Amino acid sequence: MIQEALFAFLFLVIGYGFGCFSTGYFVGKMNGTDIRSQGSGNIGTTNALRTMGAKGGGLTFAGDLLKTFIPTLAVRFLFCAYMGYPADLTYLFTLFAGLGVVIGHNFPFYLGFKGGKGIAVSAAVIVASSSDSATGAAMIGIGLLVFILVVGVTRYVSLGSLLVVWCFPLYTVLRYRDSGYFPVLLSISIVFLGLAYIKHAGNIRRLLNGTERKLGEKKEKENS
Image (cartoon, rainbow, N blue to C red; front, side):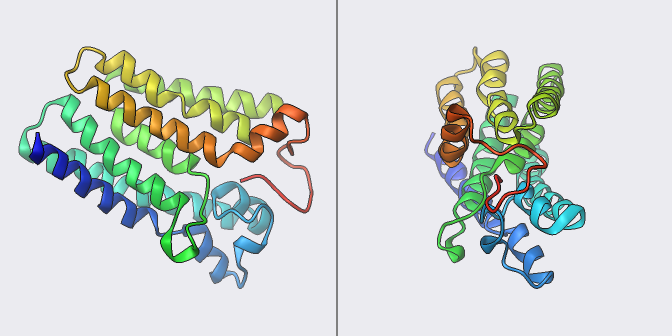
């Protein structure tokens, strides 16, 4: 148990290191701008798309996916496979690596702990950690469909994002409810959920009072 806790902490730290690569910030610098002073001030994909166009948004999205997939897939397919760990322990370690990425993305130390909102990287963690089963594949497909439908109908990116992160606890309950690690797995899944809602607190307030900006709207401050 102590060894498992040490590995989990190690993967969390490694994930944080990868997450701290703030793709949107560096893409902005390449384009001669500081994304933190544009739109919503966030370094995430949505703000990059709205302030730097399709190319800037695409590069930011691709970079954020890459920095998530490298540590999570390495933990899952290299470390855990080599150690011969069962599916539930593999899921646990992959989640810890992914959680580190999300924390690093949201709170990069060299940017004053002011980063993105973690939706793209969280979605990448869902894919990396749950694509080993029919249940996971179904959850990924449903999550993507829900996001597209919600954003397409309401044009609220934030609303679609807040619904997608529910895939973490739902998948954990459906797939690992009988695992001995279930309490820990569910707790970590809820942490992912909590981080997303904390970072979207302003969006939630605006959604409730009807002032949230819709996709395509032009305004001084944008959602990311």
